[in-house]
Length: 266
Image 1 (cartoon, rainbow, N blue to C red):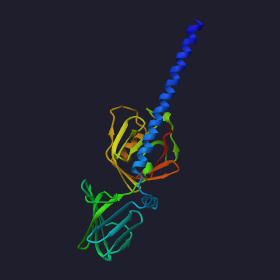
Image 2 (spheres, rainbow, N blue to C red):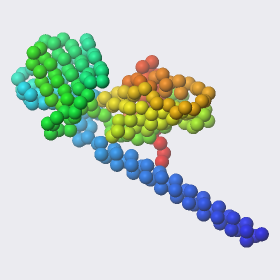
Image 3 (cartoon, rainbow, N blue to C red):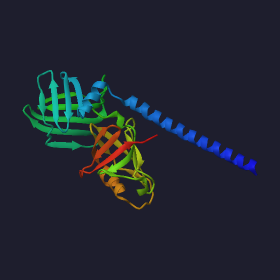
Image 4 (cartoon, rainbow, N blue to C red):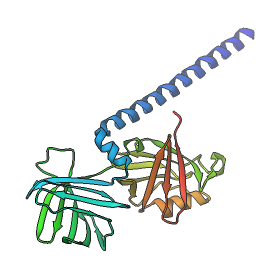
């Protein structure tokens, strides 16, 4: 009997050890994948510094002359061109049109009507890292080139919900554990869970904003709680502001509420 018990204990120890090693291996693989992706999408230091200063979009070109554009949609628009058409104005656009093919931002300036068009198509013949076809119209002059929205590459990670409006969240309050969001900036998609259902969507990061497409949800019936409602009504098919600092991610929602996340411990 003692021998049988000893063997049983030994087998149990071997199983537990194997399970722990498997978990550690899985975690290590996940960490390595996240780090590799972050390195692959990490922009140049100069671009990182611009993003930290709040710049949302940069664009440049050489047709009909060399020109450069920077926009912080909350503070300033700066345009410089070799022909002397220079602007340094508030980005108070009187008209915005966004559809599947082009984003258009328009306003009146001292130089005349300004229209900025950012196309949802690749920029051909471009030797820089800017990849969206772009046009800046000032009166009758059209400056063509390429643009990129900036982003914080460290957003590419797994983020676990920590607070809702500074109220601590606990796994026990959800049907299937604490909600989390995993951002893949290489593939421009998000996957995760709202605490009950698996969720996924396409995303586009524009400076300090994240645009979510309508969420695809797994077909599971759960007793709905406040957070699931927030995810379905305030994130799905919505654009939100984000802020990152010290391993924390804050999403600012349109109703002035906020969601706080921390990096997942792997």
